[in-house]
Length: 251
Length: 302
Image 1 (cartoon, each protein chain N blue to C red):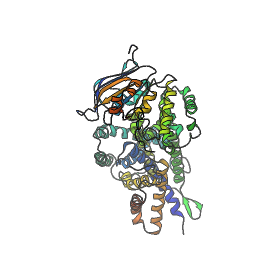
Image 2: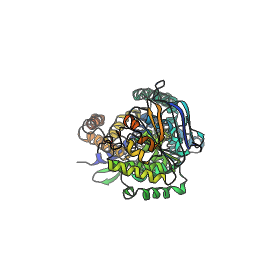
Image 3: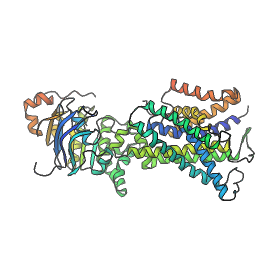
Image 4: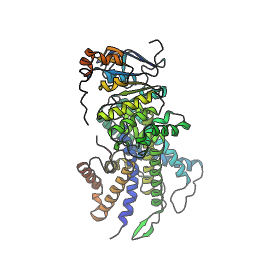
């Protein structure tokens, strides 16, 4: 693309054990204001790639940059200060803390004068959470937890919001709500990178998509073009054509 | 029937509870049973004693706050010793536990802490001998409170101190960023990093706070009983019993656990016999592990 990307990962090799890479040379870029989704079969290295970008998985080769600044080996806890927010797939909220405490904790990197107003802004964006602010987050339902995890990530007013399978474990109705919320968040100027198994829901809101297989780029293109390609749909997306079954989701 | 055991038990329980708060914090954040915690208690008492001695040597011995057995030198010394015990814990972490943490084997940490505990105790015996020492030899007259209960002014002051420290800990954990960060790391270290928490800084804070709390327990024990190199190690079993009874990670749980252990021990002394005192903590510990392993306020298992 012509404009310099907000987030760039080039030829990234990463994995938990030295010498055993799971991501074996993947490259992605995300332009300002885009929603980009990384798809692929189980074990393709999608989650490992996004965790490597977040600083949670060691990178053994390649280059990662945020807003032009190299962040390849930056410790995870410094990423939020650079404007990179990450929502893990599971255990993405502090269950023993209240909803408000979850947001306060995340808002600590914000200037002191803005913290309260940001929390109120999150309650305005997620009204479901507003009247439960003193409730232990562990008592929220699956969908509410996911919303809190996103709100927590937005507390830093990130330039890039990364999400690892936000649809995991949610009912189809809730998946729709979460993705509608992501589309709404993008309109506020936040760039979004997500990893998904639920290709249909993700492609519906994404601008572009990457398909990873065996830790490497396999396909990339506009979300509409990839969704319309019957070969890709059948091989990688589990869509089986335009009216095929969605991935099974436990209630 | 005398209710004296209640007063004795509450006092011993407050002391055990304070020690258990430090233990439960280090356990839940660092994820290993730290046997040196007992020795931090002894070191806290001896450091306070040494500083009180230093103050008395430089300035003429100060008077005491009637009706208590201590004066301002002990308060100054106690505050300094809290900081020093925290630093001692921090030093031990960087020299011993931090390199071992990277190996990721919890049992190695436990064994290392056992070894460090022996070394710390031996060092105290070398420096101060194993003879008991006292902050003051002033005789305390116990005040009758009714119902056959008698309590010394020192004991009342120490109960007040314990209450202040516990409330301060509660406020720290719920109202400050470092306190919330400690809770976050104890629940989910990986998510804590994602949220922007410097886990290494939280671990340092935990050692400082754990050491300072151990020092307060040491001072309480030193003022009301005596100071010995073994004093903290002898307290370890009740401390673990209280922390596990209350639920690992819970400050109020540790305090309540401490009170239960303290009162049960005192009741055993009164009704069964003093020789069964130390068995009580052990029986309680086993009972909790069998019946409710996550303790009274434990939020989750594993």
